[in-house]
Structures are given as C-alpha cells and as structure tokens.
Amino acid sequence: MSVSTRKIKVISLNTPFAIRQVTECFALFPLIEYELKVVESQQLYASKISNSDLIPSNHDLFGAVIDRISDIAIVHAKDLPYPLPSELEVIALLDSEESDELVLNKDFIYVEKLDEESEPLEGNRAVVALKEMPELKDIFESRDIRRHFGKVTLVGFGPGNSDLLTLGGDKALSNADIIFHDDLLDQSFPEKYIAEKFYVGKRKDCHSFRQDRINR
Picture 1 (cartoon, one colour):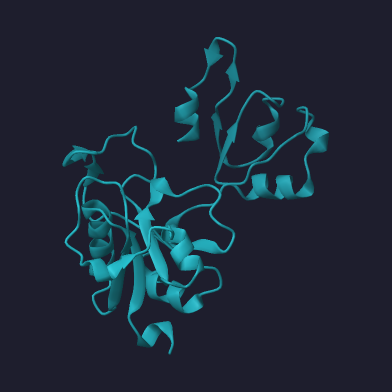
Picture 2: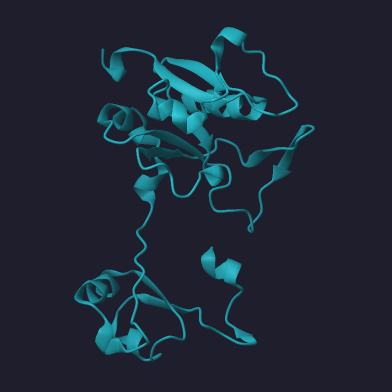
C-alpha cells in the first residue's frame, strides 16, 4: 500500500506544544489523514493521548522514523540536530500560521511576540522522513517554504590570494545576486562582479557588524 493511499504515521513528543505542531501542520493538508504516535518526555504537562498510542521510551523521534515505526517526525525547525542522522532528510519546512510563536516553559505555556533578533527558523516546523521517499515529498511540497529560498555558496581564496579562486568560485560569484565579503581579500576584487556587495569584515576592535548579525 503506498503512502498516498493510507494514513501517514506521524511521531511526536508527548507534549501539548509538540502535538499542537502536528495538528497545525496537517491543518494545511485537510485531505491527508494521519495517525499520531508519541514518545514519552519529561515535560510536566501530560497529553490526553491514551497509553496504547505511546511508543516505548527507548525510541526517540528520529529512531522511530529510521526503524519505520513512523513515516515522518514533525519538530520545531530550530531544534533540529546537526548533523541530522544520515538516513534522514528534511522533506519540507513549513511556515507558522501565526505571527505569535508559542514558547514552551518547563512549568507552563505562554505566548511571546517574535522580534528581529529571533532565530531565523523560529516558528517553522520541519517534516523529517527517510531519504528517497518521493511520495512523501510530493504530499508536502506545495507548502515547503524552501521553494522560495535562495542558495548560499561559501567561496574561499586560501590566504587571501585571488589567484587561488577556483573556477567554481568564480562562477558562483558571477551568478550571485548578493556578495558578502570580509577582510581576507583585496577589497577591490569583488567590484568585477555585478552583484550587490556588502562588506562584513571584522578586525580587532573594528567590526563592521556583530557576528550574530553577520550570521543572520
């Protein structure tokens, strides 16, 4: 039986916040049926899911997917481990339907307004599945916000010598819309490319931007 003709098996942490994430996710796909299983957690709030739907505690979320107990796991994107287990991939990144993000405190749930300094993946949900699962990808593709993402290429010049730029690096810079460059090369070098340029160099006691701002 293919994924498209049966309920999708979903694994989640056994917390109100995590279970709500699953509910919100499938609200985006009203024609898709799913079966929810949860793994035990140490959160103070207990869910109302019956014990028969609990996965043994020796399985974590991703282990349940790897062992095919579940088709997918749905997690808060900023909590994804790095690296992700080699058997798995993020098949979709879903945007939050709300402008306010639920933040889970160990004692209670409260709502906190997002601000500019929030983590880039704050409010997004990641759908994780085994690699090479095209039927699952097809189901979630229409809402995968990565369809609108750009591509980042890191280009190096060794010790700052432009003669060491590879052909691939030159091609990436030639095709770029924006180039962020630092102090490790001749500042006139990026001018040969038509992209918009941003200087983000840092020297001792002379920072163009804070590192967290550069990262963002």
